[in-house]
Image (tube, rainbow, N blue to C red; front, side, top):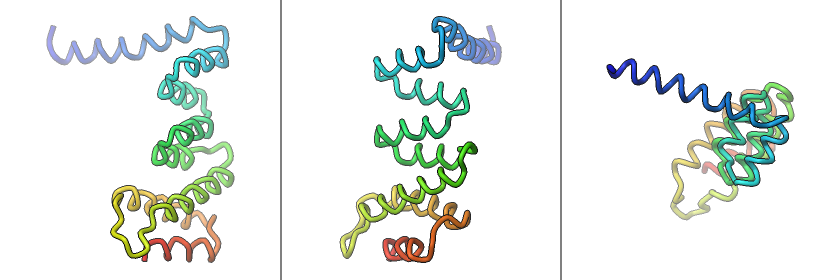
Length: 141
């Protein structure tokens, strides 16, 4: 078997197995319960996303401390754009304050940079008021 055929077979297998696994459960809620009992968080997130529940997936990422992944999913959520942007704003401000060095060299430059990139998205969406924008500027100083 050539490499391209092997890749194609693997891709088909990878897509087929989850579909077959879904048939083992009577409902999505039952499947989510099964995944939660076994702490299979990435599988839960994938199931939420497949069913268009990006906000729930983002909430799960956030509860696991995976802030960047959560922010990405909140920004992709179209079910409640204003609510999701407000949530992103809260997360960004909270994390910027936690990461602000106040005269100390920041340890997590990458994380701060990622938060500021998300902050730009939220500012451009018009969700932050002037005081919140000032908070972002203050944390960056």
